[in-house]
Image 1 (tube, rainbow, N blue to C red):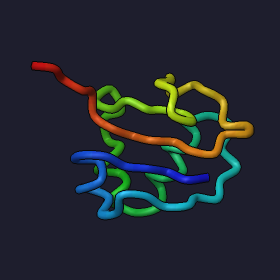
Image 2: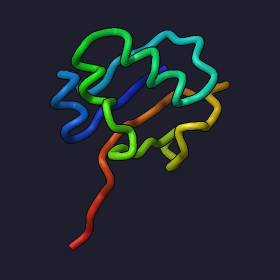
Image 3: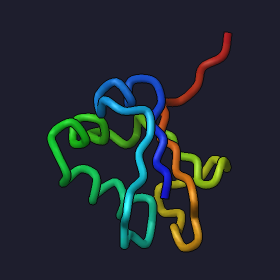
Image 4: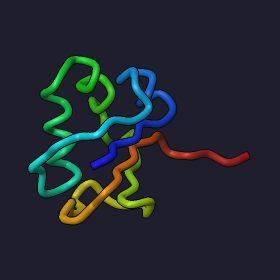
Length: 81
């Protein structure tokens, strides 16, 4: 599946997107897999309360299932003004 990173998440990980092979059942399972990859992922996902996630371009929760999902995007909360 395609995994996209935006704003400071992208800066910490160092790439804007990547293709990830995973057996994760939920978004949170995927986050745990990514955290275990390298320190940069651990830094990006250290505080998931500071992150939002979209599953196939729909705002979702971290307990969302990944079955059949093609794209996950991680980004900080948006602010208006």
